[in-house]
Image (cartoon, rainbow, N blue to C red; front, top):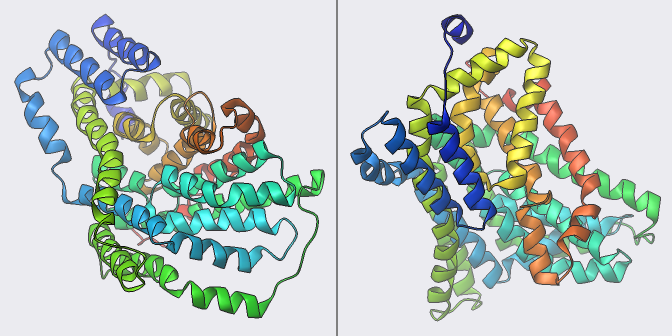
Length: 439
């Protein structure tokens, strides 16, 4: 047991550790790009501690991103972009609206379901927030929703982008901790749906209280069949992705490649896509990918330095010295993850925090997969919480609505998501029920 190994071990960390960490925080607060802030901190920490040869930095940068699994990241981003440009995302929202739009609070529920559909394809929350937001916010306002609330609803629904497979976040955490992305996708199926349902239920409750969307037309089977038939090609994409991964036909990376090819072929056959669109799509997807991969590259040397300094072991020792109660330790981990998600993007949080917190989770009996699901879900709450809340800024950017007004309206959704996070922390079966007995 880790605890037995650490009972007589303490890790004394001085300013050679705390200085670079504080510098990273200060640089991020000053709006220095995250990858640059982390890279500067990592280099300084390596130089002053001398725990690893600084000459290995270049090799570490390239080795860190030279992984087959990471190829899925730009491919899923590109799939989401093709989905929007071909109009297939509109078809998915039409199916969602036909499924739930006839009931009370139906348009709001349909919006969240549409975010879930988009998440099954793109694996990105920001892309989902932008795509769904442009198509639904004005409709929600016309239905009677206050504009800030409509923005908060879409921002919250788009959190499913990193929580419902195939999620880029699970690909990254699997790479860092050595866990198969397919295993994490399987484990995340129920938690992802629970998050989506929590957002739907929260919206229904808020509708009951405030009467935003009172009228209901009733469910029409004829309309639903027509929407499903019209959107059959759009629905084919998530079926191919998830079906291929869950049945073992594809790896996540192969599924991403098949998804790109499928969406492009559908777009060309329907004449919604031309060769002139390809440079724009590739440039747009490259810009998003260009934000993610440098952060991963720079975060890995920092993570290796922290490991060489025994920071994870020292953290376990410190926490378990304060309390050995698994309930309190889980609450502490959730608090750390949510706080980190509020001030920093998901990718550096995963690369830096997962190796530090995993030993602590193992010490209190959590298995690796349950920890990963709890971690990503906790970080997902940060997408709708200031000061960084990425989805808040994306929706604010496309609507002009104040970030703080959107954040205030998102508070009920934060509470709903926290309920699911606690369930994942204390009920392991939710994230392991479909996994082999070894978990």
